Image (cartoon, rainbow over all chains, first blue to last red; front, side):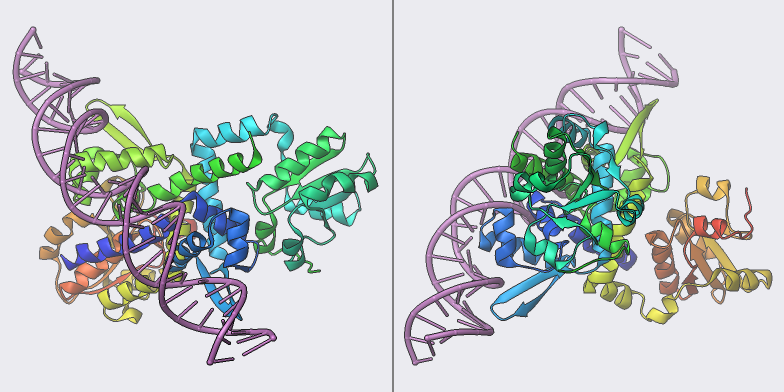
Length: 220
Length: 220
DNA sequence: CTACTATTCAATAGATTAGTTGAATTAAAT
DNA sequence: ATTTAATTCAACTAATCTATTGAATAGTAG
């Protein structure tokens, strides 16, 4: 009897984490927080939610043990509670990609040709960077780049991409990356670069995965 | 399609998987399905839900891409849609265990003394089995036991545990194991055994790890 | 002390979800 | 063809969740 209760309670606790993952806005917030520490205000801006709404979602994430926060002056800064959260998000994306037809369809219709989209593995990229064979573009906003980026990467937020292309030799291979495996920024950048005749690819996953896989990180 | 819509739709799709994980009953069903193919009827019995309710939860799991089903005669059999689902469940449990205080508390208060909960290492167990000092319980379903088990282990699925206890001397040390490091079956078994006054522990990890570590395996 | 800012709390309406019941399918056995 | 068993569907209530609003709190600066 109490054994059944124990089991039930335990599953209920596990379900709290699942529940927290059961809303698109919260997943988007997690994606941003995975880049590094962020204030409520920042998160509200990038997600397009109201501050109060953002705050409430953040508390749910906190109660589920997915994020932790600390107070610094006026602001409350949130960050992931650990790297295991990134693993969890990756596992979630994996399952969704492999088993939900609609995800494939979405990616398909948005990114016209899928097989050209093949991502460059991290270690391949490391080698090619060492040999100077490739330009790595970090297409995230400046603040995120400064908080940490792939060594040798150039920060070119999407809004500045057109201007930057003037300085980029046409024959240069380009690899772009952003927040994570499904961040649209990198898709967008690759699409535009190809339009201009560059040989562009996107990096496997994004910066959070790069970091949690133990690869070197530069800060500005 | 605008980039913002794409992003939003994508996160919404991912959230479907999260939602499916956001209910204790569904997590329990997944746990049982992870043991192998199961019919709706079986799942309803072991989870204690009504058949109709079980069926509804299963459809949600199916729509989220977590399980697949096939029809065989009168029955519909469900199984996990892939091994990545096991990874996802592991990641979920990991986060819950590491970051939710209540989980620790639960395990703590229910399994009175926590250090007694310490898992028994594989080689220690081997020795004690050889000396006949301990009864090893395999609490997995019969089919899995037959496919391979720890030498000398007795197959006692949880449902049959109460009945089996009549034949078990009170002073006997008992070690239980199941599918893997986080399988609740073993916890459950240990909890019930302790309630009855046995000196019960669980084995380190589970059978797959035992086997892959090169320890001997019996088949029925 | 007062004004200001960032965040959280509290109350609300509208949407979604869980679980129950009983009827409707589907496939096999008589 | 009829009966039987396993599963799903449909309708309903109670509970929970989302997003919005406006007020309350805590830290900072003048």
